Image 1 (cartoon, one colour):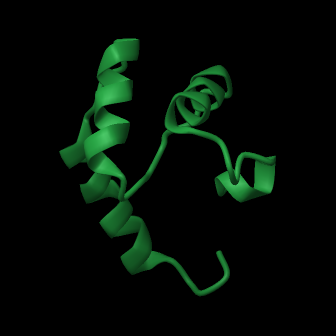
Image 2 (image 1 turned 120 degrees about the vertical axis):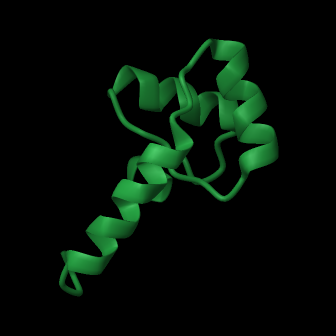
Image 3 (image 1 turned 90 degrees about the horizontal axis):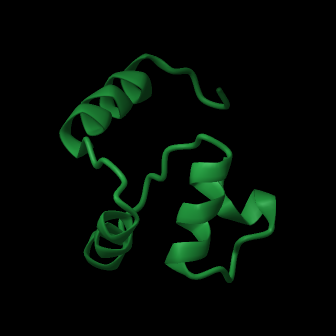
Length: 66
């Protein structure tokens, strides 16, 4: 689910992280420098390598539109 789909298109990083934490979601972003800083400030774990590996597997085995 993209931030645009939940009305957070213009939201700042801390707001997106707050929403994700409340909804028990994982944030996938290319905005690593600032997003990581805000995540660490919140005390959120950042298991990036494991998540990236899992996303690569999902992408490889998924059909278009899934």
